[in-house]
Length: 100
Length: 397
Image 1: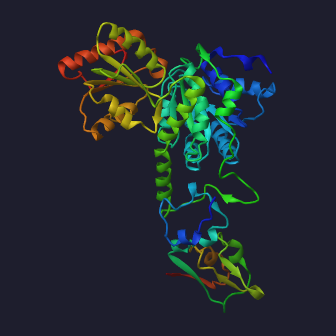
Image 2 (image 1 turned 180 degrees about the vertical axis):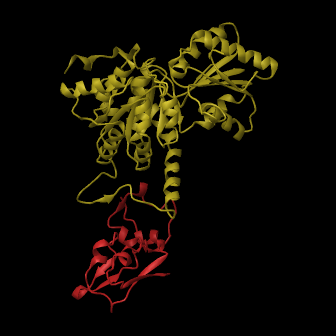
């Protein structure tokens, strides 16, 4: 199987002839495929209210809450689909969903 | 060397002939679930495996859905793979049929064509395969036991061709062919091994160098993958002809995508699939003796549809009867009829055409039925039309 430039495909730079046969493709590929354009609302974290409980990190179905040092968190906006679960579970209402 | 290896001529049921071909093809994996009238195929194969005559994994799945899913994994792992089903079993496989073809898994499946419930019926018609018509498989139809054997062997070569990697169904009429003993000529094992040597699957599952299979493709790429698949389908006729030519050199038996019988100067041609083609041929010969210009057109390859070859045969034909052993309820007519009508229209041809829906649930199609249809066609030529466009042939009104 020839090497496929996944970034080119993600950019829309392809035709049916250049796509890999039957979508058989070398891994890892989903890192190149930003799924954030599904999002309508995005979560915003007010770091001053955050108590570092990590409930958002546990509940995020898309692993889009990134852990930083000392228990702080931030949102991975490349892959967050805006489901709002993090805002729902946040006990201090530190996460708000805002329109894009 | 067992005795069978010397044998050239055998008398086998259609199911046994398919099983014998699969054994000679030296398959690696058989995953199946038994269903009438296919059961004998997998029964024989399980015996071959148990007796050590065939070195293969025989996996009895808990359903046809699982059987075909197993086949996909096995084919992508590079194993020569076979399954077999009929009727409800094929219907249960339905979603997996699309996955097998669009993941480009080379699989050969024998289908013992049988009616669908309800009412419950185990006898022959083509409703099962017509439901699977557009699933991206190559569909071949056998007219007799010899063809069931030959097409099964050729199916492996076609399916595994690196330009295709498309699964193939070999259709044989339930009971009429599956359970009828006919004499047939078989190839020697060595001849079969030379004809279909084991070649590695070009995108084989390899843990050292992994690929993702069957990934998600969203609206931005999905359509391109489907267009790519259609392109592979367009290559099928060429591979089919290459395969049949090579098969001729070892067997002396000629195959084309169509069986044309007395069609060159025919005024009226009947078009059909499966064992009925044999009945029609017999009757056409009788009519020819009386100098009545009828012909028969059988489709060995139903998908991809050999449109160009068909319109060429029908070029100067005045009257066409299409025999459909299935129906599209609430549709324009039977599936073969609508395919033929579309082909004629695309090529600017307007002969007299009618659809004859026949033989559902295994109702016999006798020589007299064939005679009557030929006579109806001669009358239609005189009157410049049939009395109606769709006949439910032999239905008690």
